[in-house]
Length: 381
Image (cartoon, rainbow, N blue to C red; front, side):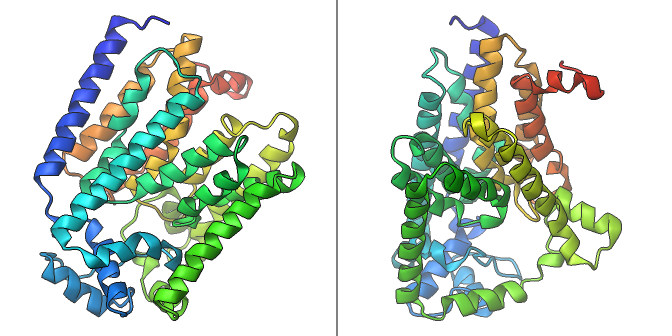
């Protein structure tokens, strides 16, 4: 298929912007000023047999690497993430950030390549836009590991038919931030049981057991330390701006449980959505809707975590291009998100509150689903 010259120009411009950003990242590798420092500090604690969730000790370690804030950045991932943090305990901060960014870039390149293949290897360059996806750029700028979440989702989508054991094992990366994937996981479990895809469950169980065994070997008190940290982390008042948090604030700011109501509703909806479509269920279509809804209803998340929805964003681009729908809506959303990021608006800002609904609406528009809702007061375009 021949692309319109304007589409080629837009892809080239965004690709150039992405390359420029990567050059900037490579030349400004101050580890102490990035979120990466929390993983490095946890690795240092683990390498020395200390508590990776001890806030006072973490602050001292981070300060030695140039961290200047009064409150420490603590790795809030469960102990199954130790396989990523532990190697950082044996390198300096400057070497660690370089290795970390290389690992993030490798995850991104593999993910974009596999997504291109999953979408039929189209003869265009739309997949290049994946490198300029604003949450992806945020991950690289801050050293956040949303790109590992992306890799986990992508590997599952790519292998779930041909290599179910490997597909299940890839879900370990998603389990590093399980609260982002609960609707997706609920459907996955029911799908695996109803279709007898037991090898997917076996792969996930093996990977989780291996990661847990490593965590126990490194720090046998890890889960107790993690539970203590989470109980005292003050998540209720953390400056994270999500739709779920605003739902709580509108009703009762002190009732923290309200923040989990949207995700609970999303899980119930996702199960209904699967059960009413299980005969024609396709993880590369309906599964992406569930993924996008789950991201939108997460009780707490960062803008960089939205890298996980890139499979839906790229699938929407390919579908819209194939069906002749305009790519302008995506361009407007993408440019607005990039502009916020490059003007140094913090990723925990209220100004990113609109992005998860925007990615979902983009996918619904690109796949023609908004047209199906026309009779309910929605229009197709």
